[in-house]
Image (cartoon, rainbow, N blue to C red; front, top):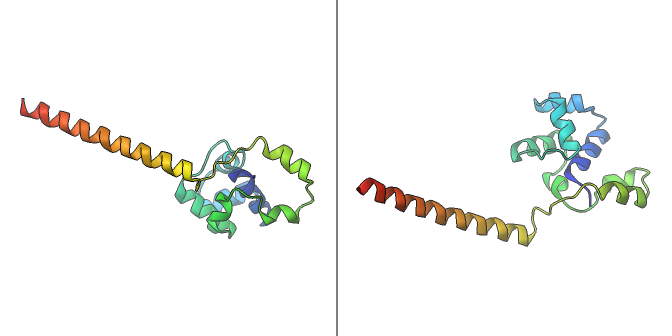
Length: 126
């Protein structure tokens, strides 16, 4: 598995862009690109879409867990890839467990909001 940051870096390098070049095109700072590529931060959905568009890749290619074809175009050994990627965990954004957890959290939030609204109604009635 390859992290989002690693994929962004590899696609950027394949287009022969520096971090500064990409940052300029995206109207962000170079440190923003650096933080994304080093997996110190995750871009929001809008920035992720801009990155995918600028690098001319499908956004799913950036989010996909599998090692992309871009690796096959480089002279990396499987051992080197494995050694690097063990420090770059990736969350499967389409995993059923993650989706189920998000839905449960949203249900709990809805219940809390409902309880809060009832409490506010009671306070106003006093």
